[in-house]
Amino acid sequence: MLYAGLVLTLGSCMLFDGQDVGMEGAITVVTGQVLPGVLPQGAEYVCVRLDGPVAAGSVIEEDGPAGQAGTLGLARPKALTLGEESYLFFLDLAPGMYYEHDVKYIIVGKSGAYQVLDGRWWPKVNGAVPEPFGKAIPDPDHIIAGNVALEPATGLVMHFDFEVLLQRPREGFIVVQGLMPHENLFSDANATYLNGIAFFNAYKSGASEVEGLVQSQAANVLAEIDAMVADKMNPITIYIIAHGGVDGIRLGGLWFTAQQFRDKMAAHSSTLFNFLLGSCHSGSFVDNLSSLSNVRVIKTACATDEGAAPDWDTADGVVDYNPADSGSEWTSSLLRAAELIVTSPDRWAQIQSLSDAHNVPPTCALLDVAGHAALGNYPSLGLTQDLDLTHRTGYTTPQSYRSWLVLIPIIPIIPLL
Image (cartoon, rainbow, N blue to C red):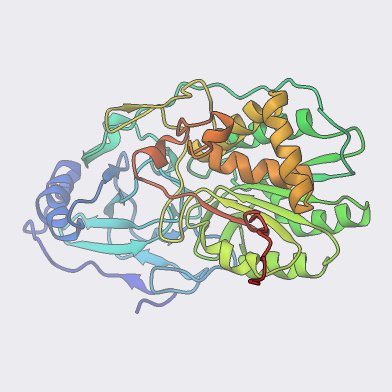
């Protein structure tokens, strides 16, 4: 256990007779001694360096959201203070993915001694995230080791242009982008947000409202739910892109739990809710929210023990079916499937039939069907392509819940004579 204010003394694992090992010597320590002992078998990884040494007395801490317990054996905002000038390396064990996920901070002192710290978020040095550590795709000059080739996606922000096919009640749509500009994958999250805003603005009826919350505004999401309920919006669909962990997400630098969302929805028992979450470990929210009688649809980017991915165009030699899309791979796939349904009168007629048969609003039926169709699991609508490349290649398992069962035909029982 490490304590606040403690000067971090590096373990003497390699000595250079009092001489400064320099950057090249520190890299040799990391690649030759540290990585072979700390890399999980079969793990994908990228190890990134800073440009130069970090001064003695510098403070290193995990940039986790306020309200979440720390993962360095410390409770935030406690931190580590370097006892000697050192070289800092960041080992990302799920490169290119949303957070939170396993990472390691490798500190090599000028003496050649080193220390490895486990984390779940990127590090801060003296209160700021070092620029090389905040990039989704690090500069090649900063990568000292790795076994994945990260490439930028080429998609553009999605546009939607379709007519509302029927009058619907006053609905609310809350679109949330929880990342701050310094956070990893901010650009992808911003595209994901813009996609959601574009889709729901094109889809909503004239009496409905779309409210967007970005960066620090994202922390107002619970209050926005109250405001939409007060405006008699029903159902309310919540669409969130954020970093997250098990039973929690990071919104504007603050930690919000699944229980907080459950409590808020439970407080408005006469309002129906749909919940779409694109964070890592988002499947953990299903158990919390599905027990509420007023939650109609839950869709998440991945299972409880999985990470969520940004936009991918290729993976393991497989090419995405919709490379022109942008934003997180799962959300763009779901919105594209929803567009294919809404713009087809025949497909929309099936949505209306499901809505009538199960006595749920059309939007609830649409989001449920679109979630399955995005994965190629709706042949009755002719939607059989898995648009989510991360699911198609086995990296993620999107989760789904709906409050209604499959309609089972009632067969009359004829008594024996």
